[in-house]
Length: 620
Image (cartoon, rainbow, N blue to C red; front, side):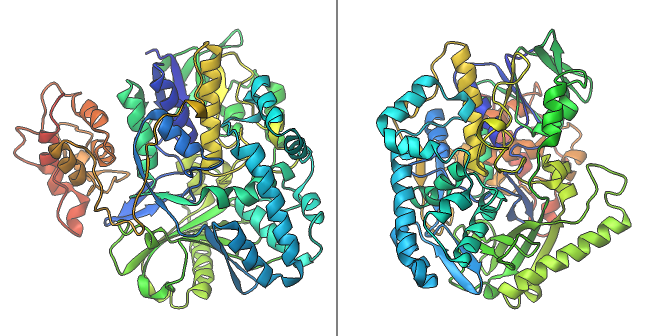
């Protein structure tokens, strides 16, 4: 097999780079070890209830400022429905609920009430950073990592507002504490900003680069906070849709074991089944440690391997998922709340809670709320598929940690434990095995001085034809940051092929639609074709099981789960492509319907209408 471009990993950064290149006509193949796209951005289902499995604090869809998600979907000309949260989020700090209003003046007024002695300083601080942001970032947004910025792009920004730009660059090697000392004196204010930086990028004000925090503190107030209507399956699924509609290939359940190199040039990859895919261009979207310790031969890149292993990672995390009765969640609770137990340092009681069913009613039945709670774990956990993974000690430790996190939630939401209908916990070991988070570190190398800007993994690799994207490359954390890294990798390849890069000035139409809040799914339209729309909505009943019993029961080996997942986001091309692997649609003459009899949904409701879906998914 041969492909013009191979992308290792179907996470958000890899999908972004692959979709942009496929749109420009490149022959792209994406390979991922898991059975679905998204990496840590995606979902799983339990009895029709949709749980986010990781990245769900979505910024970057605003019309102003740093909006890489909106840019990507507009560049790809792919429509997407988005919910806009009324407020950004809330921090529970020293017994006070601090609501982060999108309106920055309203927000600083609230801070002034909590820290009255610093009221004027908060106004000046946020006014100064806002002015800097509007001149340097929002005026001419460029979605690129520092190492890919051209001299022309840098010069254009400098000429636009030279004083502001030079001031911004002056923060390059300063920490956030340095920035704060110019405005504040109260120790409690520094503690507050410590919690902001630890929430945003898992660092304190002493570690966090001022060039990062100066943007981070104000960006969301201009751009807003969002959630893909129906879940993040729509975010990653639509990127996959663009790849496939532009003749790209998606290969799942296959792990890339080695990047093949000859004379310091990429020649392809070898998969875990020994299959070789030839290519002169490989984009690695995984973390820096996997790249140098596994993918690249030990005899190559020795200096960079040593550097990679010297990097400090963010702390490991636990993720708790629960379905609880609505009655225990106060009416004024926001979809995203941060719980702080120790204002002086990061500890295991620092938990970010996502209650996205507050704004999206399609995630679970009314009368309930879905909960995803993420927090640090400083205990030792098995690495990878270590022999200790799932042994008795591991399971006991997991049970203890689940109870500890539940107690934190109980303190914030009295009655929480008694109101639980379902609960499970992902450990750092689970995160490493399922979404390739090194030792469960959810944000890759720490975003600290000495590991920032040009001191991160470069977009252009040290082997010819190797490119990188993902959280190890870009400064900043979260979905906007990794999306920027995917844009950078795609644009660098376009540049080196003397092709037009994706630029904000070329966007002609807005494909992002802000839907009603709360979202009820009533406006959902998967296709303008009535039959397609019908079978797409039937496919949404699928539970997308890790080990689908329906497929085990199907004598024709139809990839039922993957067809349903694609149809659920309107990817009818991808669904048909899977079914068309059979010369004749095997579902048409199937009388046994053993797949529906084996469907896990029968345990709590009717089976998915698999036969109806597939016989109507006619060839086109």
